[in-house]
Length: 264
Ligand SMILES: C[S@@+](CC[C@H](N)C(=O)[O-])C[C@H]1O[C@@H](n2cnc3c(N)ncnc32)[C@H](O)[C@@H]1O
Image (cartoon, rainbow, N blue to C red; front, side, top):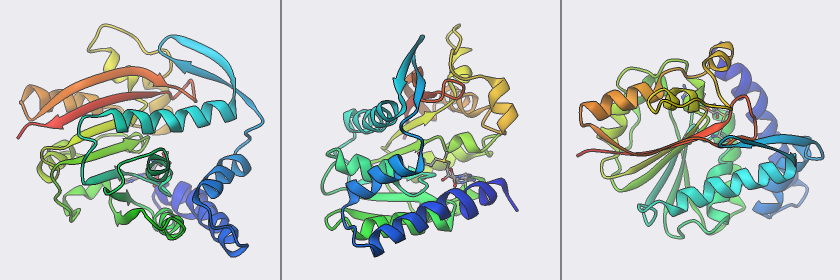
């Protein structure tokens, strides 16, 4: 069994699916209330945490950090120029929380929101959540970064984003960046990934809240930014921004942000 099946298919996202199903069966029909209770009831939100950003570490309540994290993801996506797009894709979307919060935070009304996820339990949970949100256009798709060429869609002028899902592939599969370019021309890609340490070496800097040691210990990605830089050298992509350690709810595996687009 693959690690993603052990950790997500049969554990985390299955629990989320069951939680959402029970809430709906008990009469809950409000998307915000269910997403919020997922955060409050399934995580220790009365705890405090160390939150990092840039070089600063601040003691915050975990609820504050998680809420701010979610709002900031939405606001960065909405702030990108391409965000009038017809299609918004998340790769490795889990149960779809980032897409649903993006919608609730005022994301483009007539766009199609597409949750692309490896696990069946994650996709099932996202489908269930979409049933209690009348006016969102939501679809889900199976993807596997290791077999991405088989992904059926070709969509130009899209927003495509990832949140700690490239993280899950220790080595970026060959051709992933090129395939994304081929299938999503004229699109904006935004990665929220714990790759500050990868970016830092191109800028003669260091990352305070991510490291190769942590990535290797957890089998997390070690080369995505190298692949992007290689594609940039070949003029296949244009990297607009690479922001180290922007949103670090976990100060050992903090989130950096890369914004890029295919060169067509
Ligand atoms: C840390 S979770 C993040 C989920 C979601 N982005 C979020 O922020 O809630 C990592 C996600 O990557 C997915 N994933 C792991 N390996 C994958 C692969 N090879 N292809 C596609 N998705 C994968 C997992 O199933 C899981 O949903």
